[in-house]
Image (cartoon, rainbow, N blue to C red; front, side, top):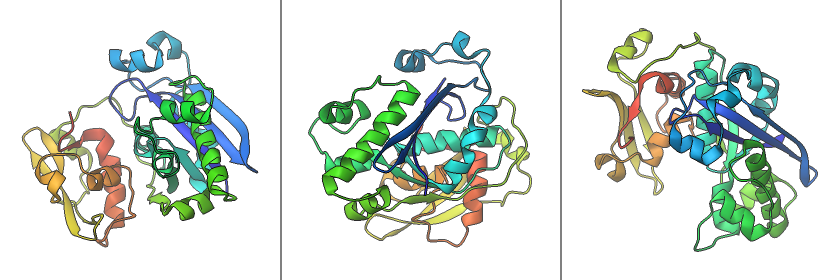
Length: 289
């Protein structure tokens, strides 16, 4: 199975605003291939905070290909392989949102978060951010360059494999008790233009159920419910867990955002696909800014 690390940089707070991507393939215990590309986002709106992080300006991507063009050659490997990402919920969310925005089918995805790997294999009081772990391991790279970040992510996984004396990433996940997360894909839809998060956008999905509700398994085995509710500020995901009751964006909501059905107890995986299509267009999450 193909194993590759993935990293995105975004132009602003939206998951469908990718402006750079990096990929690094692992085989036979080493990084064997690296790719990186600038991407022209659907809207040329670059938030100052994002620019401070990655240094990419609108002028840098004005003549670059769009998300669909850049990612098309890699979708086979991403759909058939195992994806590594540092803070995987972000990068998988960007991948899914970008494909959905472009009107492309979202493949089924299997991924492993190297933050979780690092916390188990290379814990430290300072934390397990990409730069901190790389520094502890002596991995030299330029942080917040997508290609460099993907390379560092891959090298962290390789270092963990050596530390635990396992032959591959699947064996590493098993040794650490980390399940590979599997996110359900979805069919191609219409390409979406610029939009806002608004309850009126519900009209774009006339065939959706009147209410979306999911039963999710908590970390201790408890059963919680996540539902899509119409609120004055627009549709909102709410969870019945303790964090959700306090208006926080809990892990159950985060999982559904990226189509992760690992802890789904209800028999409605197809609705997770629908929810993933809706999220980029109009849904806000309790506790989100």
